[in-house]
Image (cartoon, rainbow, N blue to C red):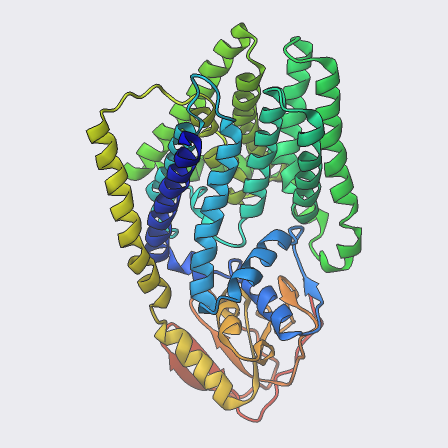
Length: 494
């Protein structure tokens, strides 16, 4: 009876921590969670599917399949867009805890897997809170997991793979673990090839080292590597039917000629992170966790403890592989570095520190978590229900006009999400060419008679002879209304 009670207590603590984290994120990073140009794509896709619209999405290499499925199911609860995004954030974080619980292993003499899982998840939540508002300079890696767009499914998929492999190294029959590994690796690669760098390459490398160091049997190493690498390859091949939807050119993502610029960007963001007190704590915590992975892993190597070696080695090589990708790709996309936030914490799950707290202290901690979780609920609801007068002004004007307008990516995305008919706003670049990026190309494109702009908009290049437009101010948004005059659109681009 103690095990079900311990599991229930662990999930209860995780729920309280998730609610606290989401309440803070929704309050301090509402733009990222609800209105960011990238963050709303899953909501746009789910709404389009629910309306039964024709589907022809122009996507990046990420297909958002699990994310869209989860959001769609949650949307049927009738919480509205911001309410569903808020609930989705809680679900994402609970899924992270589930992955950590899998990594922590089964109950056995001397082990405290639930305690390790909760400690690891608490560390992840602490990193999220230390990252501060999304607009603050520095890294925001744990924070991104609360969104529906920034690779939450890939984070959870990586944790599940590590957990399943840990169970197999711990003696679980391969016939029980391999099917799960195959399914998760295939689906994760299908929806996001970044999974190969975050998980597949580190796992293959670590199991190769374990084999060469005679820490695992050759048969287990061969089966594991074949299952992970083979299913990832199969998942990548299954992407073929989506080729017409993936509009990003490979050259956009592999720019080794810009490796120097990528290193410079990493140095700049690292400097911005440690320039604030919470960033110093965040950096110190990550480095301490990474050092613990190395120390615990080396000690496990001497004890021939393959389970701990494997988990700690993946926790070190995953962040290293993601950093190498950023440099080789010559990119400034910090989101590729997310393994730094969710892999080093695995050392707490697999080898939690020995804590002997008096019952009174444990009761106080449990009570504080319960109170925090209860208080967080109305705070999250209030943040989700906080109105956006500027966005409401745009939505009202566009719907009352009955006409079609256009705007640039970072400006037009949130208004499209709030419209009953999203095709009333066409996504264009500043030269009025339709910009087919994370958008449904099957939407109708009526004659454009007004433009929407804000501080994120690049000045529009209007056709020669275009007359001055009437300006309608909606707070941070400005509508340039050309009345009955139609603005010609150029050829679509992606």
